[in-house]
Image (cartoon, rainbow, N blue to C red; front, top):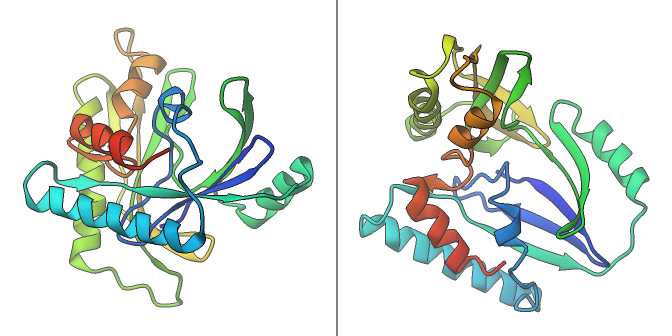
Length: 231
C-alpha cells in the first residue's frame, strides 16, 4: 500500500511504500531514522533502481530464512515550497477516514501524513487498535486472495499474542474491507481494557512496530531496514 508522509525542512519529502505487499503505516523510531541522509537519492531512475535492489535483497533474506516478512520503503525528495496549513486542510478532506497528523519536533522537523492504520486509541482504560494488511487497488468488487487474508490474520494474531495476557475484555472483530485513497485493505478492530499492571505506555511499547510496519521477527527486520533503506 501507499502511505503519504511529508517532512518539511526546506524540502518536501514523500515516503512511499511499494505495492509488493509492503505497507508502511507508521514510522520506525524517529530519532534513529532521522540520522540517515537523503543525499544518496539523486535521479528518479537511480531511486527506482536502488529500491528494486533493496526489495530483491529483502526477498533473498526471506528465502534464506533470516525473517518471515519485511516492510520496505523509499524516500523521494522534491524541492518545492508549499503552504503547510492549506496542504494539511486538503489532506484532511481528501483522506476523510484516515488518521491525519501534523506535528513538529526540533530534531526531525515538521511531519504531516494520513494513514489508515492508527497505532492505538486510548480513552481512560479503554483501548482500540487495528490489524490492517493486504493491499489492492480500489474497485467495486473487491476479491481477496488467500495470501492477503492470511497476511491480515498474521498481523491480527501478532497483536492478540502481545496483549491477551495483559489486558481484560479483549475483543477482536472480523476482518472487513476498508478504503484508503485509491487503495483498499483488510482491517480488524482489536479492543479491550487496560489494567493496573499494563498501562498506556506498556501497550504502545508492546504494539509498535507491528508486522505491518516492519515485519517479523521484529528485531531482525528493524535491523535490516535501518542497515539497508538508506534513510
